[in-house]
Length: 239
Image (tube, rainbow, N blue to C red; front, side, top):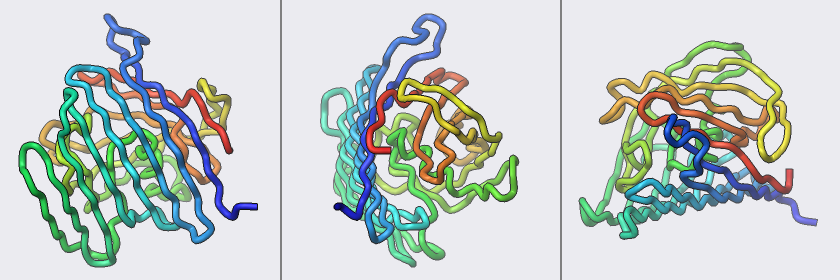
């Protein structure tokens, strides 16, 4: 019998704009493997249909406490290769080697104060995994987390890839029972907030529901403001 566990699933992207309400605008296929050594590996293939269309492939490894170990990202924008990058993280440094259409060859070495707490590589499945930063024992509330990184500051993750430093807030709303296309789940409801001054363009508040079983698997989410997008887990096997 294998000593690891693998989950597979898909997330549907839809629009919440009045003129496009419920229209599919993309999709994501993912594989999450929890290894016997405590490492979690996430493979995600993401497709955004809205022009210019985006195709993103991400492989992200996390240690048992959710710190990123390494990550590879390949992006296509408007049917053209945008960039490819490989990131690696140690107790003292974050590194990136890559190439992208705008900057050419990229080589970054960024000193860190301990292991990086979270990396946003832009697959939707990863948006839930970062939520383990919030200390649930404190109950509902709001915390700001500095010294995090993204692989792109663009809201669609359509630039780079390269390392971008920032901080943002996480608000824990509470526990709920919800139903999505993949079934009914006990869920935790969070909200990403406090991005003003952290990104080139402020990100609208982003509500996310994830499983309440300690695995932080993405169930559904929605972004307001100018984006008006929705995300829903529609398939899941292996849980």
